[in-house]
Amino acid sequence: MSDAARAAASVGLTFDRLTIEGGKPLEGTVDVRGAKNLVTKAMVASLLSEDVSVLRDVPDLSDVRVVRGLLEIHGVIVEEGAQPGELRLDTRNVRRAHVREIDAHAGSSRIPILFCGPLLHQLGEAFIPDLGGCRIGDRPIDFHLDALRKFGAIVEKLPAGIRLSAPNGLHGAHIHLPYPSVGATEQVLLTATRAEGTTELRNAAIEPEIMDLIAILQKMGAIISVEPNRVILIEGVKELRGYTHRAIFDRNEAASWASAALATRGNVFVKGAVQEHMMTFLNVFRKVGGEFDVLEDGIRFWHPGGALKPVVIETDVHPGFMTDWQQPLIVALTQADGVSTVHETVYENRFGFTDALLKMGADIRVHPRGFAAPNRRVPRRELEQAAVITGPTPLHGADIVVPDLRGGFSHLIAALTAEGQSTVRNVGIISRGYENFGDKLKALGARFSVEG
Image 1 (tube, helix red, strand yellow):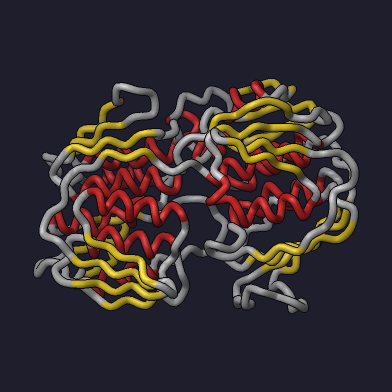
Image 2: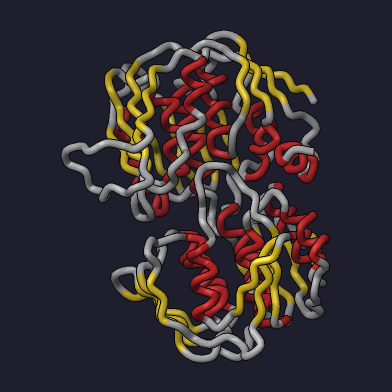
């Protein structure tokens, strides 16, 4: 069974192909719940205590199901709470899991790497199988392993994966990340909170999801301070308690629906979206020619009519323009009047999804090694790429295959924007990060049929 099929099956998705009739504006309301990039990490954080934690606004995503399965094989009792989207995590009986069980549950996710710190504290050892996830770049785990070694972990590379042990326990460390990696920052936070002594992390990621994870750890009893210039200090404590927390909203999903409204000349209210965490996106959205209205319970995005404008975008770590935002927005940029450029500086292989857009009539040229450009704000990186989008180009229906999570949603937007009929295959992978996306499309008036 493919990763996409497994992802779809885990959330009860019965189709893996959509036939979409495009050319109709999306109009209506979608509700966005907790961020995938926080919820899964918050679930792992519960392992740091021998207590009960309650997490609210949890979306029903395949990645959430993967983490739930990994927790359960380690002895965690995970139960649905009293209200929709609430999980109760009982970590009072954590135990070792069999390698085959870990591998079976983790095959389509990269989250197991973050289990290492908590399991080393609880059990003295951890095992990481070969890591899956979207094929958008190398995503090396060296940052993680180097950090864990500095805490005192012993790393053994085995044919089936990596085994870690801490016979002498874990201790505080001074860590300077070569790049402000979100995953490596999470690794350090989840490991340092119960390590003996103080940990200083330099060049840390400071994304809103990181700040929300820090808030959870502080509720659990951790002592963490965020200093200027991407420095985080963690004073280790001997034990932590459970937490009760409502997850931050998913700004990636919110930006995706905003881009869909712009590309289809529609009007979409994203319930649950918060201005504070989307300000960089909102600035670019306005520069392109989109309009938005910030309300108490969400943000309304719409196309005001007239021509869209070209822009230059450089993806970057927070507070820069997120790499997850550029893919859906590129579909809207195919309809802008002029030449737009997107410099992708975070991942080295994130423009593969544009092949389908070319098939649909877009004019996009990808520069595999990027290029120098005047007035750059983000320093060039060796791995970066660039995409030059010339518009407006009418899109027409085509038969396309979803390559990864964000690229897959971009394909849906393109099919909804295009004139005529499109068939989008392998859509199950979209369920990794978009809850009930089929129902939400229906609520916005999209015209489509489903096939298994």
